[in-house]
Amino acid sequence: RVWGGTRHAALLTAASIGSTICGMDIDELFPSKPGDPLTEVARQDLGPLSIDELHARIETLKGEVERVEVHIDTVTKHRSAAEELFKRAR
Image (cartoon, rainbow, N blue to C red; front, side, top):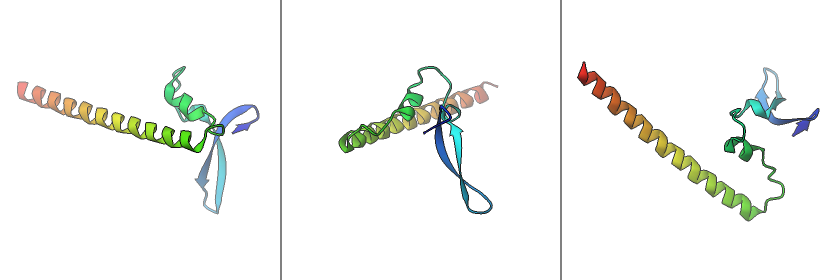
């Protein structure tokens, strides 16, 4: 969404009475690296995409989530092994 010439993401926030819609600058939600692919994906207008293209996009993103989860698991195991190695060396 664009408010006042700036692109924003609409976020629902719970208020003590009812709820409010709060505009937030989309750049605050994602990394500030220029050309960051995640930022570009989040900014892409989905309007022109067909249902089939949207389903293909979802499947691609699910595959990316799985790839990231596997990488996190690998890094976690590597870190644990390194920590154990240094504990034994003491």
